[in-house]
Image (cartoon, rainbow, N blue to C red; front, side, top):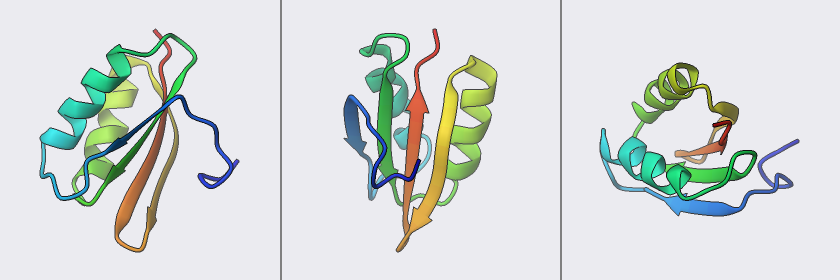
Amino acid sequence: MTLGTAQWQKMLDTKGLQCPLPLLKAKRALSQLEAGQKLKVLATDAGSQRDFAAWTRLTGHHLHQNQCIDGVYHYLIEKII
């Protein structure tokens, strides 16, 4: 599955925001989804790679993809709980 063909229920654009705002906004958006649904997040903060990887590992959500395309980080997070 690539981000171009991946299915998600909600997309969140956090480009231009610095840590911790991309993660905080993603947490809020994910809380509005049902278990099994996916959130796509776009970010430009390089630190968000570390933040999203650690946060999904700690919370039990699944980070399907973590990819940088032309300076924009694309995340696909599945809500598990």
